[in-house]
Picture (cartoon, one colour):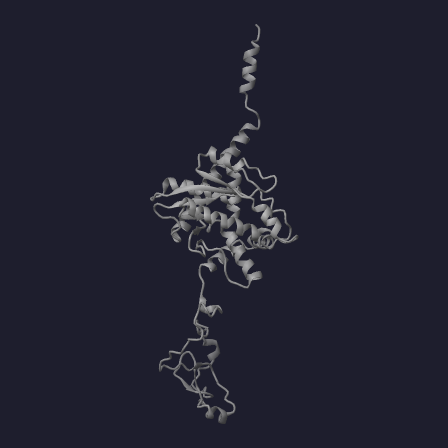
Length: 352
């Protein structure tokens, strides 16, 4: 009996490779991770939008897309939310091609066209301007950011966009806080929502509650075509990079520290700082009543009684324990035996 070589080939092709099951499991795991992470990001972005009223009915949201992980994630999550949001708003992606040498001009247009996302690609040679105005050895980030921001602000008004969405996340806000604290002498950061100085544009940061490590994982799972920043990313010893390293070290050693710091940024107590413009320290006045509270202790030593009398201060102020009525200082005959063992923890004035 002869063997049909065609059948043999067909059988061999249909045989599973030993690694196929492993690969399928990995793909399933990635799919589950992506769904869970996507759900988490959608919840965090939705909460930030709600908390700061970032997007309203009829808004045209201009999403600034640089080609980095943050802006890709922002655009992707906002598009997902647009489908299920109870209000109508439009999204347009805008990229500023700053004409950096070697910049891959086709990546973003190809991605946006493939996803059928309405977009504009703005071409402006800010690279040459930055290189010409920034001294050799200095970082380009500040000048580059100002030029980019000015171009995007003007374009948003030109097309009638009502909100400008930026991809800054929670860790960016924390890093900016510490940059200003360490190097700028100010307690300030990136707010989740901001009216521009000329009051012509409103900026929103929907990723305000999102951690960078989640964005990194999401970008990897989604396989976004990342475009690196070759203008400033190659510069060593950037202050922001140093701060970011510090924050990552803190996060590794103390997982809740960054969350606590970010919560502190949302829980500011002006009266506990020292900004005279923010709080009226000069206008503070007492509002005491007639109730007196004797010192809760065993004794008060009084010295220089004559000087105290000149100031109309008492020379025998009262004391009291936790179980008796006030008495004159020095008189401890009413105290029970083993009094020290019966004492409660002293009450501390919470205002101080």
